[in-house]
Length: 423
Image (cartoon, rainbow, N blue to C red; front, side, top):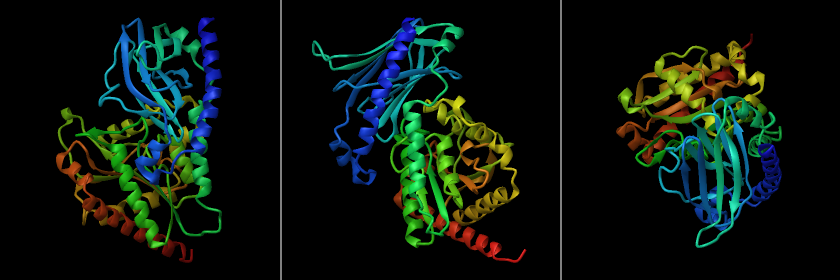
């Protein structure tokens, strides 16, 4: 009963949080206005986060500069606890959350949508939220968000799960993606629409090396590619994200499908675990039911976990999206995806170091739009010193963006020519 009452209270907090998030989103600065604008928004600041306790009871404490509303809920398979809060500026020490204690294996935090942040806890096993509250500032201590986890068996954990419906943040993130797509076109512009998808974002950092995160590297590249494509005036361009925001995989696909996009390009940067040696160069992936090799399968598995990392309720994925791999058997879309991949490889190899096997395929969820030609480009390996030097080089980025823009021109020139031929 205590847990049910607590859960009801949290849901009430969630409703208040929703209103706060919508207000914050309406007043947020534009991403192009830079850090100064973000600072002027005066978001709450989190200055420290820590875990205490053991494998039976574990406590999480987040130091803040003011009280905030929050909504906490568990998710299963894998065992997680998600905490949605208004947008917070996280000033936490590097590596915070990468290791755990007691019932918590690790935790992540970051922006999950404009106006809203999220903390996701990976649990060692089934555990319930025994207590959760905000402490007032007192005795020289700042306001604190406190969560107390308690070990339970699987059946009790399942009983504590919320009803199968999206959380406040998930619903707003989905709505934001739909709004972004809706603004892309009023139907009067007949130019081909290209969707650029910088991978990861928000609390999903992607791969990391020497202080560089994949989410930041690919965002910078994606914005530069957008600017280059738009400069030609031949195409319309939509970004799945233009700032450090988490976007669920399904919503990335929705952006492309809702606008009948002519091309979807997802941008990433891989990394190999040290035990797997070294690799270098760019790789271009298309969708396939069967991975082209073990490395492609590993990468697809890792990328497909993004929603779990972001705390998305995977049970909410529509069946038509979960099973969309079958739909991709539509030969025309698959043929166009493979054609663009080959053109892209041809253009990039003249200016960019390519992987020894530059064309691969695997079951990436983000490529599963059945009616939009789609590729995923791994620009290089952040785990490779030479590749990382390229990835942070503006000169390298400009050359690579140029080669990708040329491939896009070649793709559409050939596709339009083919479409104009009598059948």
